[in-house]
Amino acid sequence: MTTKNAYSYTVLRYVHDVVSGEAMNVGVVMHVAAEGFLKIHTRKTIGRLKQVFPDLDREAFVMTMRAVDRGISAAAKNMRKEPLFDSKSDALSHALNVLPRDDSALQWSFVGKGLTNDPQKTFDQLYERFVSHYDQKLDRRRTDEDVWRPVKEKLSERGVVVPFGPKKVIGRQDQIEFKKAWKNGCWHAYEPVSLDLADAEGIKDKARRWRGHLSAVADGVKEDIELHFILGRPQNRSLMKAYESAKEILRGADFASEVVDEDQLDRLVSSIEDEYRSHTQASD
Image (tube, rainbow, N blue to C red):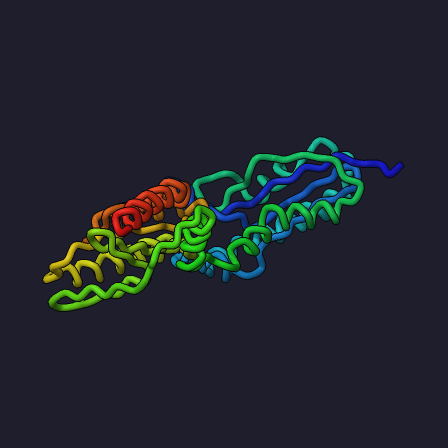
């Protein structure tokens, strides 16, 4: 039977904004006292961080990360020289000796614990779980069509074949074409908007562009248009504050009759179904 030894770990987090909670994991420290194992794995590039936090101070961040790497490596070397002294330590205590708690952007998480018979394998798994896993999830961001797809599928499941088509709305100074519109009394346009973007400013900018374009079109429009925005949330939960701001921006847009969250799709589809069936019965 393979012996399992206790291990502890802590995650290094880059906290971009304490108030909003915007943060990203940037490293892991793992410690196995019984085997004299102490390692750190941190991000070696900052492309992903810059994508999420464009105003990141690259030079300061890289210098601090290198200092943390060197500090943990030195602690590991000393630990191997004095294994008995290390028996009551854990990953967090080593980490705090290198980077104490303060009001800086880099912060250590709580200490986690477990058992392992293969420290290196467990260490690699921890890094994948807490750091690189989120890079993979963010590699493909959802498009506007990805946001529309579940609406289309739910309508199909209910046997609702709405004759969606393009509708061009022309104002005095500008115009816009909604690609998913149909007429039931007035024109109803359904516009999927993916806000699954890399950073907070990008999310709000997309909403601002929509609102600005609609404002430019609205002047001089004589026909009734009810615009239904269908929003796709960001995968990065730290961007939810920006997402909520974008929703409020869109709620104030010209033509916007409602702004629909992803968890409200069933209600939206039921509303479309009711309107469609009433329309077809009236046409019979």
